[in-house]
Length: 313
Image (cartoon, rainbow, N blue to C red):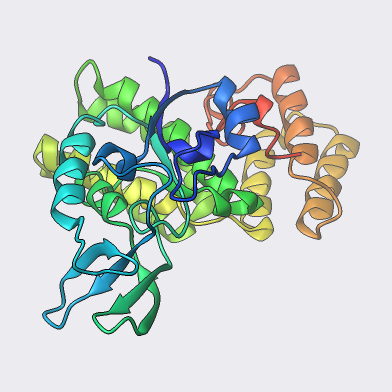
């Protein structure tokens, strides 16, 4: 299965913004673009708005409705057209594994989009773009990230972890769902979840243990939603170090004292910020090759995404 990711057309360099420009992301094009198939969409252009075009904004009415209107003339209202297009487009995206949207856009922004009242007074950066709002409602488990937030290393890694995890989930359920498949999937992702959200790690474990108490569809939805929410939390050095310590425990009976000390010191160096995560991971993988352990080898924590992304260096 090809990994498909929805993306705002302007982030790929297409000149579709209101001012005729674009918001090209080198990471999306040069690195991630080599590993996935993009589905580019510009909702504003899709509803017939020209390029260039008058700026638009989100306006909150006295009744509490959020409207997508012309920046200078709120009587020019694009709300119904945008919602109708969004619902139709989103319905066709059930097989995507992630979405990258344009930040601050009144159609695509994921968070902190400007909102005004009917008099034009600024209410705050508190809104979500209408198109992205429909996307979130239809697929609450879907990894969605803004182009600007992908500059943050932690947010970028969290997004990539979720994209590739969701893709594996989609591959798993494409031939049908079963409790046995869920148990195997969860087993592979236990340490990755622990690294991102220790509390969710325990909660998901209890959910899987009681899986037979749930109807299959309800179980799938609850697990996937909680699983993706857990991975959306940015992992810390302390949490990664905790997972590394758990993994090194699988080798305590086969490593020499010097080898165990070397690995332990490297984990502590990473914890204190003096080494990249790749350093202790590389040493762990070296020991895994010399002393194969099926359970550890199956852990997605070791390789949650392709090395070509260069995110753990």
